[in-house]
Length: 171
Image (cartoon, rainbow, N blue to C red; front, side, top):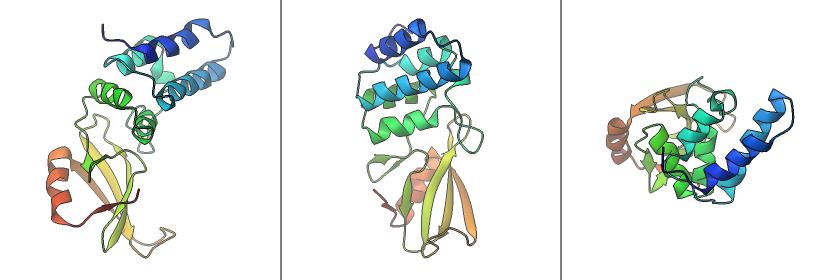
């Protein structure tokens, strides 16, 4: 972990200098500080996510997805949304992710896409980030109260599936 960037140093300064005496406040501070460096497009070293998680008790504040898996996925989504490529690459290295891509966009939790029959939404990744979980509803089911279909794909399966239909991003 010699490849640490400015993002690590900034988040580390919050960790080293906080004086809250409250685990809830510390955890909130750490989430906010990491979100801030992602949003500001501050440069991440390739090992920043791993070091932040390990050296700053990330297990307490990184959070998991609704599936109870996927540690810190909301940071990955934020990095994608803010186009912070160094954060994206650091997160992907930390979790050994081969990105799931649709029409040039990396997919993460809450990513939406559709085809002529269904509207889809990513619900998260497997714990080891080798599969992506997707829920689908009929294209006309705006409230998503009807019958749903659940899918999960490895990256190899996803590459094959995305070529079959005419999937369109919802961005």
